Structures are given as structure tokens and as C-alpha cells.
Length: 171
Image (tube, one colour):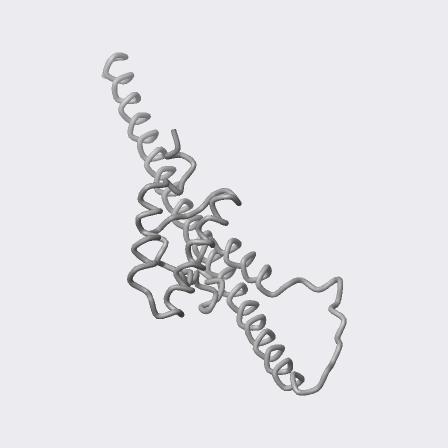
């Protein structure tokens, strides 16, 4: 064996050895990444579990409080609210954010549609627009109560068609 063959043989051995070391390190890194993601997943479920426990406690507390208020509604009772207490709904909203939406705020706190849907989906932005919409709703209610619902309603629709409600549409 001459020196050149010896060097090639040592080079191959070292390449194989380094390849094995690199492969073992890659495997170890993959295992650590899997373990890290498992721990993160476990932590998020632990947070959700704790938040759900607190949520159940808060909902139970709120129900008990409402039941007490209903029982006490017959008699006149003045109770001073504790200044240091946190409102339950704020606490539930915090838990909802804390768990990234895993824990719902409350089932009953869903957004309700407004009573008057006859405004045609108009959402007034300014107080002036709100007053106009309120006047229109009041006129409709009065017309319905009077029993002459056809003629006055047509008059209101003609007025609303002639005059734009939104300030954006005014030129």
C-alpha cells in the first residue's frame, strides 16, 4: 500500500465517520423538534384545561349570582359591589384570548340582531345619521299603530329614496 492509497482510505473512513455523526445529529435534532412540538401542544392543552375550569367556575358563579338576584328581587336589597372584584365577562374574555379561542366566552353572549331590520342594512356612523334613522323608525311605528300603514309608509319610502341617508352619498 502506498501513501496515496493510504490517504484515500483514511479519507473514506473519515467521510463515513463524519457522515454517521451528521446523521446521528440530524436524528437527534428531529427527535428534539418532535418533543418540543409535543410539549408545546401539551402546554396549550393544559392552558385550555385550566382556562376551561376557571370558565366553568365563573359561569357557575354568574348563575348563582343571577339566581340570588332573582330571589332578592321581591325584597328591596341594596348591595354595594366590591371595588376589587373583576367583572365575570371581562374575565371570560381574557380566558378566551389567553387560550387563543379554545375556550368560548359564553354561549349566551352571542351578538343579537337589532329589533328594527327595516332600515335596509343601514348602519349610521354619526349621531346625525342615527337621529335620522331613529325618526324614520318612529314614523313607521306610529303609522303601523294608527292602522294607516300603506299610505304613510309609501310616503316615507319616497322621502328616503329622494334624500340619501349616508353622508358619503351627499355631493
